Length: 115
Image (tube, rainbow, N blue to C red; front, side, top):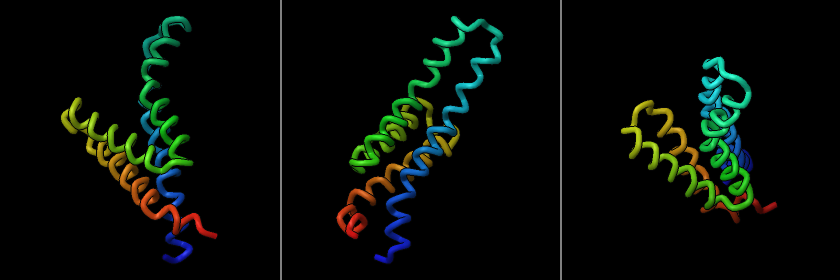
């Protein structure tokens, strides 16, 4: 495996995972359109950010253990398809792609991390 492919296999799921968490976190900004005060908005914002927080924790854990990222992102994909009927294909295809890239990184971790 060439060094550039090793770097790509190592960095793609990490960067894509972070970008996906930021992307779905943007949907929580709609709580500010309600015009409520701080004490009404704060719990609503927290509820909207529960899934992005869980995925961010998954990215943090997967930084060391790639299999965790594969399980978390593929599980999120399955949960989303089962609960939402697969609407908005990017919201199920992106985590599936990220989860599979974590799995590929886990499979080739010895080769990727060798100096």
